[in-house]
Amino acid sequence: MMGIFLILNDDCDEVDSIPQEEAELLFAVLDKDGSEKLEIDEFILFGQVMLLEFEEFSKYGSSVEKYFPRVLESPTYIIIKDMVNSRGFDGAVDFLVMLNAFVVLLQCYPMLAGESANADPQLADGLISTQWEVVETIFTLLFVSEMASKVAVFGWNRYATSMRNLFDGLITVAAAVATFYVYYPGIEGNKDLLRFIIMARVFRILRFFISIKQFKQLGHAFFGILPAAGRVSLLLFSVVYIWSWIGMYFFGGLITRDPNNPTSKLLNGTDFAGAFYWANNFNDMLSGANVCFNLLVINNWNVMESGIVAVAQTKVSRFFFFTFYIMGVMIVNNLVIALVIDYYLDELENGDEEEICDVFGSGRELVFDSDDLPTSKKFGKYVARLRPKYRLTAMTSKRMLKKLFSQRVRGHHT
Image 1 (cartoon, one colour):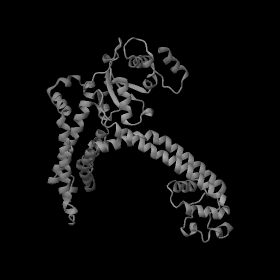
Image 2: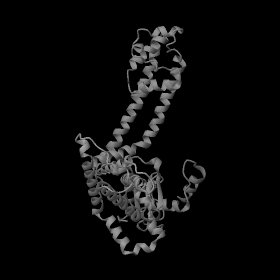
Image 3: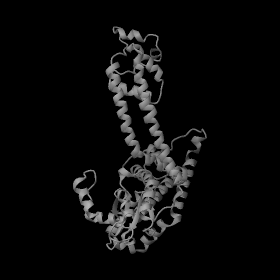
Image 4: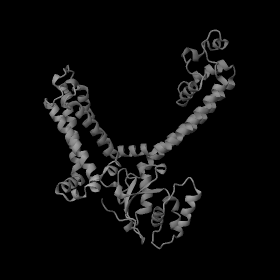
């Protein structure tokens, strides 16, 4: 097996270089019984194991652990860590988000009720002088403290594995920066920024949609389909480019409103001229791409076809539209629809599967300890995930990780 890894490094450019320690770790994952050799049923999983990448779990540690190890034993840090890891912490944050939304509703109620909204001159004086400013500043400090506590306990790498954390963190940082700018001494207050501070945090209420199972499945399916959508987009671009070039070659310059050009009279009385579709032509590549896009969404293609047939003076030109309909609409569009349905059903059918071991973030990563593998050599604690170019949906990643690890790795919390 080690010889195969050497051959892959030397002769296969499409395979990333595999260091010796990673090769031994891959072998340990394959060797289910710890016999130091692979049976046929173990070797069959070789292709799937090659899709994995590993990262030392130590990189997921917080900056406090790395640079201030003494702080880990302090009572204050222990209290913060226990609080962040408790089940009630996220519940308390959810309550603050709802309370903030309620406060914003009270502030905006006069405007929502149709009353004239007179700007308070004190809002732009750069001072925290009104009761609403005090309340909003308190909310800002609370949410900044929440983010800082999570980063201090989890570390940035682990914090960033959750889309929910990234969404909350982005809004929190934006609101904190705006607050600092507004109330920094020597800078004139900006009431528009104050409105931004108030409204930005309301978007955090969207975190509740992420918590709902159905919305979470939709989100996983959406992000899971992006790699495949990229490949389909290249196919679609190629189709549009080729047909735009063909259209420009055969029909370029024929659609014109120049009275001195005899072809302009051929469009008189056609649906094309009646709809003022003059911009839909093949006089250049970009205009041709615009026509192909309209054809792709089946937007009045018969009107555009009537203009081309009129200026080309042959019904054979209809084959251009016919062939594009087959390739662009029937094949590419249906391929996109099939991908969306397939990925969503993959999430829907497997949404009830239990998490395996200590899976965090979106479920695409799994923490395992080499001590739990039946191997004599110990590598320490690692995070296993599918390589980015092979990731499909979150459930696909879960099933792959479960197949390779679930029978040999004991669940534990980190």
